Image (cartoon, rainbow, N blue to C red; front, side):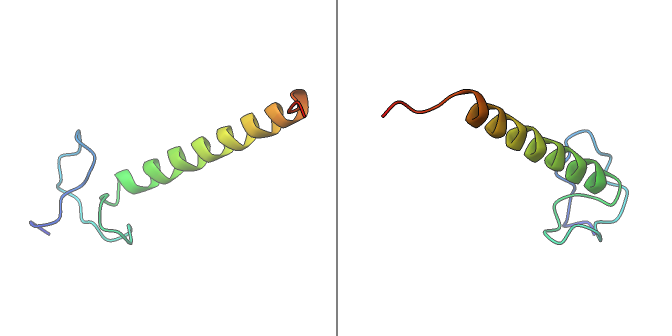
Amino acid sequence: MSDIKCSNTVCDNKRPVTRDPRKQWCDTCYPKRVDRQQRRDREIRWEQEFFNKHWKVAE
């Protein structure tokens, strides 16, 4: 555990790193990171759908 540290800069690194398969985030920060990534992916998908709906590429 001492060799593996959480990638979150504000984390105190006192919790174990077991949930993240890449061993980058502690068990407390990992769900927050996953939620943020999923929100970002949804926003990108929404922007792409909006763009494709309202703008057409000139031929």
